[in-house]
Length: 145
Image 1: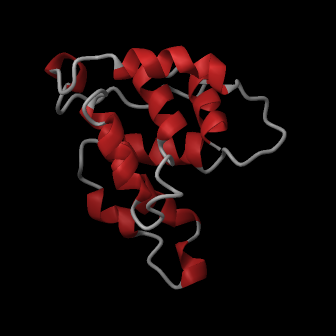
Image 2: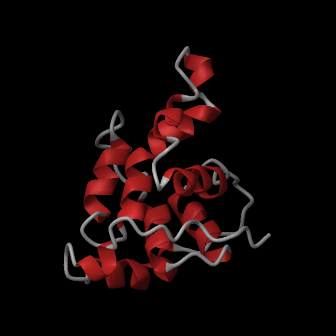
Image 3: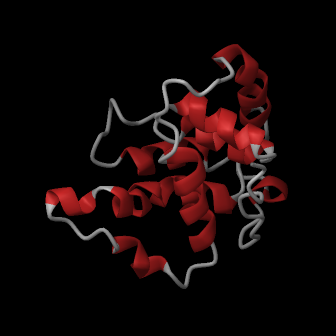
């Protein structure tokens, strides 16, 4: 799923922060299924834009629009964030790179392809404001398809 998410981000022309985030956004699923999104965000937060870390941290809530009704939960829980500057980025991330990335026939890049990107991001100086860019909205690139 992570490889497919990252490949979709790459194919859409996303920058390295989005691509690495797409690859790692569900990395906490096995260890912390109830808060995997927060765990993944804490791993990448020191090295990526604030917008990207926020999106990863909140993608679990935003994904509920696709399945929550089947569990009797509120599918519109993400509306609590509708006025947040990163709201649309998270909506787009979930729609284009998360929810759509369960297609067994989608052609994906392998982990070796993404490894240099992961190394580049995690080699950055942690919490460097030149990478974190608090409050800056880059957004998910326009759909290339």
